Image (cartoon, rainbow, N blue to C red; front, side, top):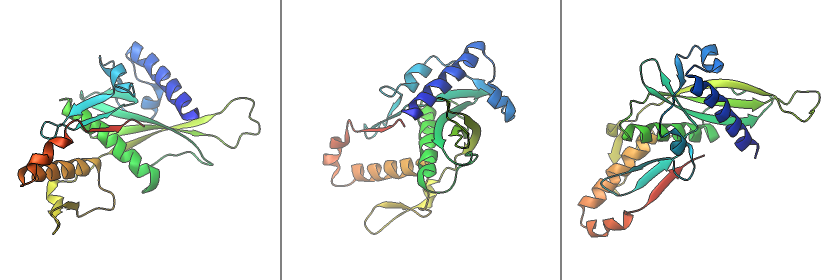
Length: 216
């Protein structure tokens, strides 16, 4: 698939700068003071069949996902990076509201959350390396040209105080139009804690071993 090819080539390119310990020109072009970090577990965290894994102690539910890249800024914070590729009549320079882009935001937040559970100092701002194939070329000539843009995204944590219990004892976000991943996680944890404490707690162990995976 084209997306997989772009993903592979981007990883190779950023890895070459990682090996040199210097910033990629894209970072410099956007004034980002960071560099690709050579973390000992990066290859594992990138692999779709391993990824970053975290098991929630109370429920036994395992969360995992595979990141595309990991950078580090001058403050020592880790930056989660996701590669995206598309073909449009114009370059993608920002994320719009709704559709696929909302799922991209949740995906990035999920990776940030996973790394935070590993005890890492994660930056609240992650980045999308967004590659848009140019469709205005006069000829194909067996090659595609891309416009590459670096799009920042800063997650907005939805506090547990933003949740209320309904008459059916489920927890619903007040601002439900675009809940963040952190909101979903808080909701899951609150509901599972509630279930484990009620009269049906004896059925709770069946949740053990459940896995939630986000890798694309």
